[in-house]
Amino acid sequence: MRRALPLAALLLSLRALAAEPARPGEDDPRTEAVTPGATDASAGDRDDEPPLPGTLRALRIVGLEGTREHVVRRELGWREGEAVDAHAWSLGLTRLWNTVLFSRITARRVAVSPGVFDVEVRVAENFTIFPIFTGTATQDITWVRAGLMDVNLFGSYREAGFSVERYNESYGGDVYYRDPRLGDERVELFLQASRLARPRPGFTLVRNVGRAEVSRLLSEDRMRVGVRLEGGYDTYDDPLRGGERVPQPSDPYGLVAAALRFGRLDRTRVTYAGQTVDLVPSVAWTTGPSGLFGALTVDARAFRRWPGNINAVLRVLGVMTSATTDNFIPFVGGTETVRGYPDSYAHGPRYAATNAELRWSALEWEYLVIMPTAFVDAALVDDVRAERRVLASAGGGVRLIAPNFAAAGIRVDFATPLTGSFAPGLSLGAYQFFW
Image 1 (cartoon, rainbow, N blue to C red):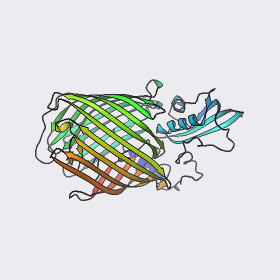
Image 2: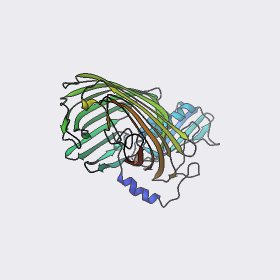
Image 3: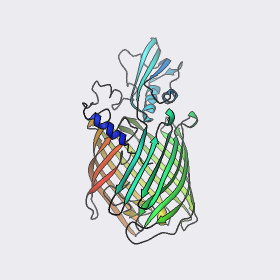
Image 4: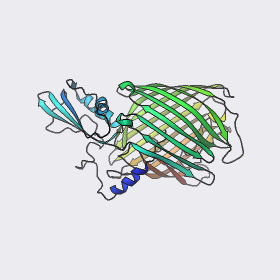
């Protein structure tokens, strides 16, 4: 699901420009417990706090406005009358941050008697309802997408959203629902229905699809195991450019995929730390020429916080499929893979890609973080035109992130292609290129 672009966040950020920027590490209540390391077991520890482990007598949550208290208690996992050690303390705060519902989290222990303490957790909630608005306009493409999403539906930490779009003369949209704690367990349910048009060389693909995925978190959220079911059909509109090369319609298709994740990414305000590897093997069938075919996607990501408010990020992606028709063979280009190239520039059943970024939180205000970024992208594609294409680009940009909105902002990048005869160009989007 592409991240939203909240207009309200930009309006609120104008107020922040008049304020003095808060630098991590200074005694500023807006940045307390949001700097790197704030979710460690020692986060919030003071000389007068009782040590861990100990027995929790009472837990008090302060600062909730729309979120239900049950949501916070469930993520923390600390039960009154039971022991809490340093590991449980750290894990509870980390899980609470990873909900993206809060812009500030602090926790303080107060001694009651030897080995017994009360805990007060103070939070500041993010804005969780915001509009979706994004699009682009060129000589031959006009794309507008608008909608609304809520990542904390009725304060329950459930997510729902919808959008409508116009891609030249094609209309579409999507609606989705996500429950990351189905039945109060660490089980996620995701449902989506969509009709989306995407331009390809020689034709415009219109994919109509329904999707359902159920997954469970294991090993303190360091492993995720799930299954995805998908069904739909493809139709075709006129090409946006080039000669017409409409593939044979695929008719209805179905897909079954396993969703495996190893590792965990931990969040504090606008940065991440950790590593993940996603493996998605799938089997699909269609009444079209591709018949029964398989695919495998491997997506590895690593995030590391460096001194000076720098987030170093690396992604390595590999995709392969045995499909034989254009609509099921991956397209590689500037929209999601290598910035600076035309969308769908390369097209092949196998490709490997990598993206490396250095993100610097240069200035932080309550409602706005300015994050300059340098990047290098590359991909190697076994193109269906019997040639191996190498794509590579480098450049820089800036992110204007609204930290009080759940993972929202504007991305503006300037990319220079290093292969082919393409001029440098802009890459625009919402939030980050990947995360």
